[in-house]
Amino acid sequence: MVWEPSNSAGGFWNAAPWLPVSPEHLNRSVGSQESDPEAMLHFYRSALAFRAQHQALGKGAQVTVKAIAMWLYFNARSKP
Image 1: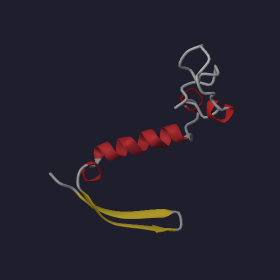
Image 2: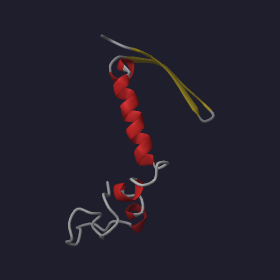
Image 3: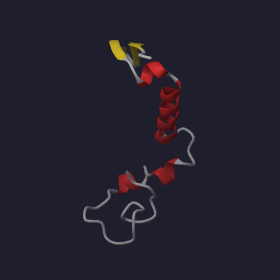
Image 4: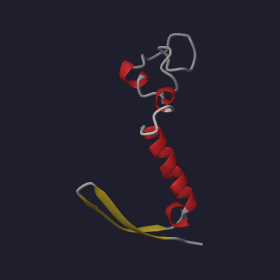
């Protein structure tokens, strides 16, 4: 995960990284996505919050999964 686009190490330190960070990844950094409400970062945070609010999504068993076009359907059973 690249934290900020300001340096070639992706925001971890100013030293040269042992592997290069692709410029594509610098543009997708957390720092770049914070100001964009439509960014994947905010979608992921919302999905995690939704999961935390629904016990069936955190504990339980998955029963049926079906994908139709762009939609994913599933049934889940929660365990107390």
